[in-house]
Amino acid sequence: MKTFIKVVEIWVPSQEGTQLELATGLYGALTDFKTASEQTRFGYGQGLPGNAWAAAHPVVTTEFIHSCFERTQAAKTAGLTCAIALPVFSGEFLTAVIVFLCGGDELHAGAIEVWANHPDRDNELGVIDGYYGSLDYFEFISKKTKIMKSFGLPGQVWEKGLPVLMPDLGESQSFIRGRDAKNAGITTALGIPWSDRAGQVYIMTFLSAKATPIAKQLEIWLPDDKRERLVFNDGFSHKASDLAAVYSAKTFVKGDGVIGRVWLTGVPVIVDDYGVEESTAALLMPVIKQGELTAVIVFCL
Image 1 (cartoon, one colour):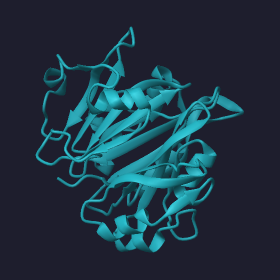
Image 2 (cartoon, one colour; image 1 turned 30 degrees about the vertical axis):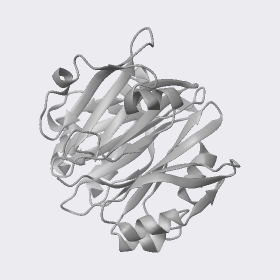
Image 3 (cartoon, rainbow, N blue to C red; image 1 turned 135 degrees about the vertical axis):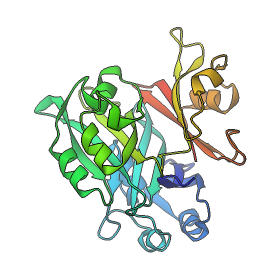
Image 4 (tube, rainbow, N blue to C red; image 1 turned 180 degrees about the vertical axis):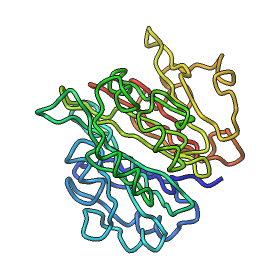
């Protein structure tokens, strides 16, 4: 099973707090790109991670040449075609920058989008950046689309303030671009709220095809009403497992297991063996709003 996401990195502030250094990453067989990353540091506003730090919102790079991306040759050699950096803040302080690098061709359909509202039109969202690979028509439609709160995937994420997972997009009545997604081979979408600023909304969406899903398995864990435990909310498995049944009796308190650790620290974590399948690695990512954790998302890769 090949996933749309090829590489995941976690960059964290150095001891002095003035630079970003690589904490850990998932590279698969891309050892040369891993080596290039391990030898690199980024200052505030430097490179893709440093740009996301300075911008305080997700940043997408679709053309490595003549962009803020600094590991261009290593990425091209590895067959990577786009990168996205998601800064994780607790209030005004950065805890980490997560970088996803993807590879796509005509047989590996997928898209990554950043939706945001406009200061003068704060009641609607539009695509401000994105990567669509070979999906030219879907890109055209998406960049022409404006979405109000509660409508479509970005609008639902905006209204709930929580991650939203949509499987079977071609049959979904709530995914506004459902017909176009079906024609493009897009089947699954994940929307993530990504803003800690009053009045400014950023929504991340990952869209992928059945042959190359976003991840082998996705899980969304939310705090319960009393904020005492994390409980399973939604998920997707390429094995078609009933994750709600699998996790029906499972909860996590702060510091309990790797999921509870993410809640305790507010820092993303990569584990080499999440236990879903033999040797399945995973990224566990916190979603934080106004200094408070609202969700933990698990990407099994």
